[in-house]
Picture 1 (tube, rainbow, N blue to C red):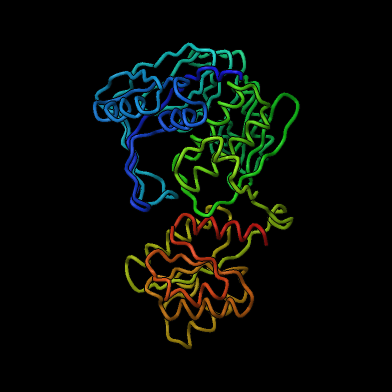
Picture 2 (picture 1 turned 60 degrees about the vertical axis):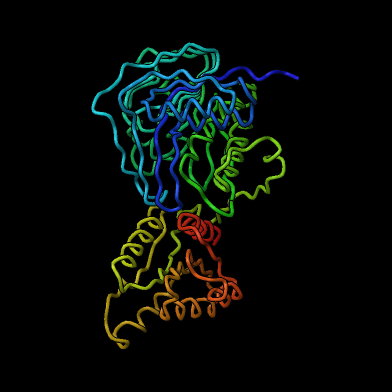
Length: 410
């Protein structure tokens, strides 16, 4: 059996907090990627290069000892930290006031991440670069880095920022501009639920994203980059095949927060996310947002749901925003017309508010799909909703993605 070459991973190793679902770990991009590769490649295959303060170093040393990986940490007074209320919210980021001297790595196979508190100068034969937070149009080699073969992995938002192309540029145009900027062998532009576009030489292909029961989004991009680097840079698979494997591994990670082994990937029920012809042609499905709007907490959640759904290009009809408060004569008919003119309903089952439950029933009577966010409700309270084929989600981020996937298929 061919042995997997060693991979050197360089980037951030940060402390992470999330309020819902509860999460407090030390990972960061490079820390998470090193663990993801170690789970697949086995012990003694990964070297993690990062900055580490006393707090993060203690955790990283213990994890690397457990995983059988090698840690090369530059001791610094403080590293970054990320705090999320939920994984779709922009995190609160603490960055050290000082910028540290660059980490230098020389190895055959390298996965390099962009960092906030410093930089990495890498020299390798096969290098994968995920710029992440570094949204300035600085080419890969501008800091002295070099690679015989180089693949850039980034998402559409990052590609727009780096290339300066106008909003609406196609994924292929973004990939071509990114490749030219970095003088790269190839580029992967991640497109969220639409999967990823892979540009390799003169050829481009697309690989799908996959549906999961739940969606744990924090670090999903790190896992994608890790598995792409493992397959393309270390194993020598084609870029398209490597991206497909990376997408599948990312789905497994999103579904359970764990780092997949090969046996896990072999049995994972891969269900590609399907987009209808109407969606691909630019149609924006309309979602009716059914929710109680009587307390500050409920209003805050309505704002979050509306913002997150619109972030994915969906049109949202919100009774609070689009109708407002009023008497039954003032609002009921307008709300029901809003349901009638929408493609699906997203319902917040907070306390099983009677108005929200009525709206759900009205929508189901019209045959409209309904996604219900129901974190705290009992099975007994949800019996009618479940029995009428509503999609029930206990996790907030998962409910948003389920609404998106439902809308994409219409």
